[in-house]
Length: 425
Image 1 (cartoon, rainbow, N blue to C red):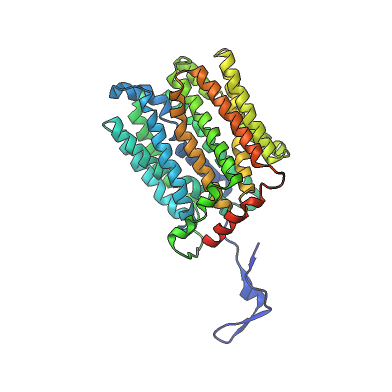
Image 2: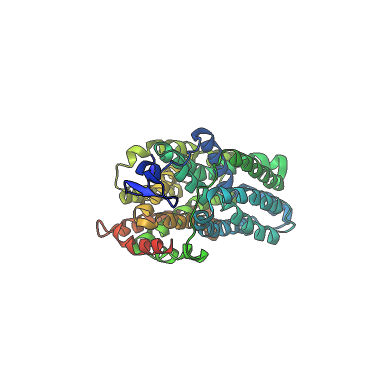
């Protein structure tokens, strides 16, 4: 649809020529992205990018053997990436608004490849720890720029499908990259897997360069720091703050469960492969059901998914490994439904500050993902871990319900940070 820029019936140019309203006020629509190849390129890159948080988990024993240390201590390699990844969301989300989506994508993917090679060449755990944080920062250029690009350049009738698919790819990467790492580590080693990731980023760069349209013209106003002014008000907002805490807990549990499976010897190597793959059907099925599940009020639906996850974890603690595959499938289904529901709850409460609020949502996910391995190592056993995470998920469900009280206040309190965001822009 064309965009109208004025309402006058005629306009006199500096040359003295008068033109009609149609000639003077109608701007051609921006070109839309080719749906099929854009979605393919973005979804595959999303798996590779987000999966770097989890790829280390199946490699812990091999890395520990090579360096002569304990697998539990190397869980900091997951945490270090998560810290850089989370910080990158806060930095690069606003910068993509100022400088353009394509520019960040074209810069971020080669840097991700370079830092992945650096991690592969790490001589000691300490060096690898620092490089993993740098790798996380470089990889973080992709998610905010990618989701914003899809929201702007995919035709409206297909936009929801595109964003849902790429968001699902971010989540599915937790399973896909762990399975791939476990299958390939014996053949190419953990260093080879990071080199393979670097090659994947270069392929992704070539694909993005071919499909991503040129950036739209942007008007920068105010100082560079002005784009960050809305962050504190949103982060500490009563309603949104509770939902961010629930988001952190959701991701802590998700990563801690898979880390616990690895470090506590719950199953054999083939059994671990089956347990990791158990969540994939849920990741496909739940998004297909979301059009029907979305009929339930957002906060109630979110709390229900979190509560279901808590019950599944408690059941794992009670029953042990006997029905672990089934219960993990239920748990992953709860996470798969809870994540977009939390996204929706944050977006609904953010008013005009939606973009910045969702950057903080992504930051909360990264914080939870980076803390998950440390939480798993702290419990000292798989069964206590399951009970602890079940309590945490239950508290997250309660936080979401509290954030919706009194009824109808979820959207209104965000007016102050939204106004700040508008001023900052």
